[in-house]
Image (cartoon, rainbow, N blue to C red; front, top):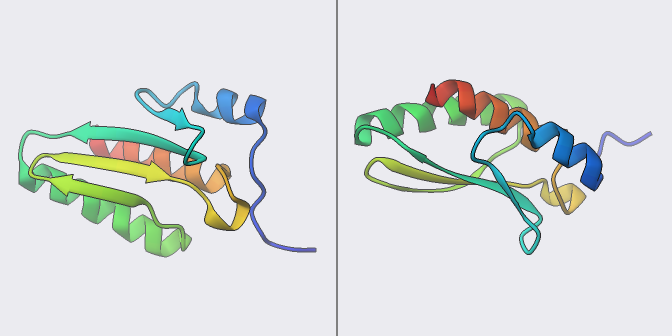
Length: 99
């Protein structure tokens, strides 16, 4: 039996994303995306630090882009060619880090 993550079905993804405010599915990238806005660079950097530590622990890393107080995040599981429970878990954690 493989430990390879499995892409979520449309209904699984829709249900999982219902509690993720501001996240959207991008069919072209087969990813979920969100732009976080913070008060300043320090807050954005703190958010990225917390997310990076979790990403290392999970061995599941976001694609992101940062300019000053804005962090654009894209989550997808390349091994599954789409969104998996790993992406939802990271997005959920990022929501708590941004609160």
